[in-house]
Amino acid sequence: MIDLRSDLCTVPTEEMWDAMRAAELGWATVGEDRSVNELCARAAELLGKDDAVWVPTCGMANLVALLTFCEPGDAVVLESSSHVLTSEAMGIVVARRTSAWQAWSSGVVFGLLQACLRLSVDVPARRLSVARAILPPFLSSLRLENLDLAFGTVDLLFERHPLDVSVTVVRRQGDFEVRVVK
Image 1 (cartoon, one colour):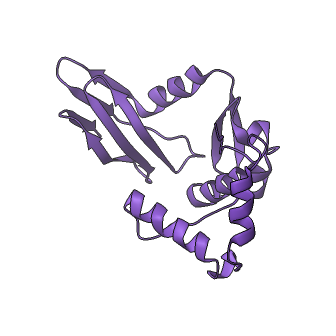
Image 2 (cartoon, helix red, strand yellow):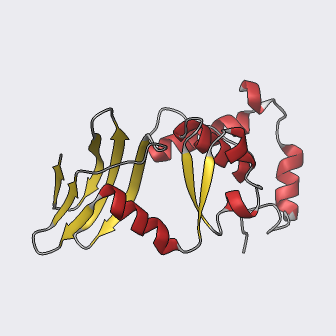
Image 3 (cartoon, one colour):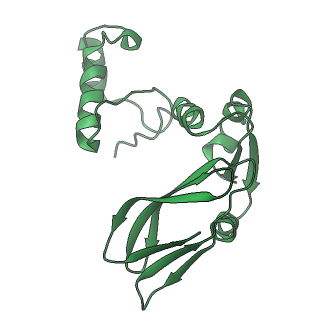
């Protein structure tokens, strides 16, 4: 088995070493590495996106995500075994000047989300309701992805505004209603 989670999990095979030795050289950072360009094009195609970016480590990927979705001063809720806590020494949280909340139980995160977002599910009616969602002052937006319900799956985007929180259905799979009460 080849485990691609980390270079610490699987030692390259001879075929992998041969491919690396035979690869064309080029600077990926300036778009001159053909293999990286092909990888990014293929990833973008698979995901239906215009383009993709390759980063060599999961720490760099986490940094890109944090820089993309968090503003300085935002809070980040981290599960206790998350890579940011266990392997990155909170460096990306410090780099973005955010604060991190550590959730010692995975259930804590869902309880916090349900309390703030005021989600309720009515299975017989095939309905997800969001009633007057709130976001704490330190959280300007929240994207909840792949919320798996008994009757479908939904992605929701919550954004704080001066007087309320807007709720946008980003993606929905299944036949059900999403009711938002302001």
